[in-house]
Every structure is written in structure tokens, then in C-alpha cells.
Image (cartoon, rainbow, N blue to C red; front, side, top):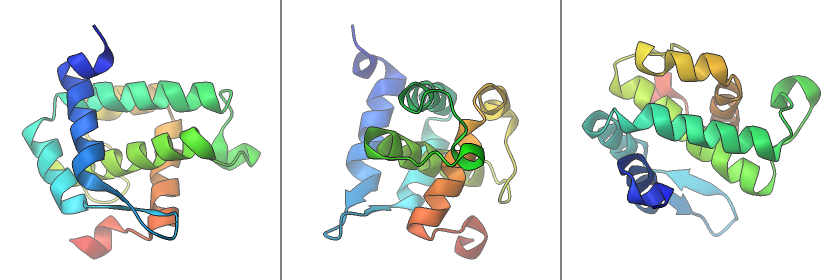
Length: 135
């Protein structure tokens, strides 16, 4: 059995397939409206998916803080960080939280993996997406 055989893994693959789109300039866009709907329909998957992405990002960057130590997301770490940032932001919106608030459903994951906060900043910086402006 692999991760994609489990509901959170299948949900993550669905998010990547349906909500992430590669652009010709090498950047990535996200259908945040659809991602919010997916987070609302399967909120139980979000904490585990964020945990898995955070663990993988931490492994790829050697546990260093991205913002504080000047470590830059590159390659697979950047891809995972953008996905985690998009899911984190969409889940907060799906729960009715304003920008920079953490819903209790994912609070323990975020406290264990502060890199998720940095993923959100990276996501906003790279995509120009601002939850406050989109509401």
C-alpha cells in the first residue's frame, strides 16, 4: 500500500491534478476557488497532507528555516512548498479564517512544522495571491 492508496494521498493527487497548473513561463498557477471547495469537502485530509508535505520539505532543506537562514526553496522543495502554501491558505479560507490565522484543526501540525508558515509566505510571494484581496 502506498500513500496514494489512502484517502489523504488520493486527495493530494486530486488537488495537484485539478488545482495546480503549470504556466508557459515556468511558474505555476492555482485555482484557489476550487481548492477551497476541496478543503471544505475533505477537511479531514488537510492535516495529514500538510504534515506529509512539511516532513518532506524539512528533509529536502535539511531542517533549516527558509526565511531566517536565507535557504531558498528550489526544485522539489519549492514544488512541495507551493502546494503546502496553497493548501494551508485554502483551508484557512474554507474555515472562514482571516489571513494569517491558523484553524484549530491544523494548529498542532503547524506548531510541529513552522516551515508551513514559511510555505504560505513563499506561496503568496511567488503567486501574488492575497487572501484578503480575494474575499
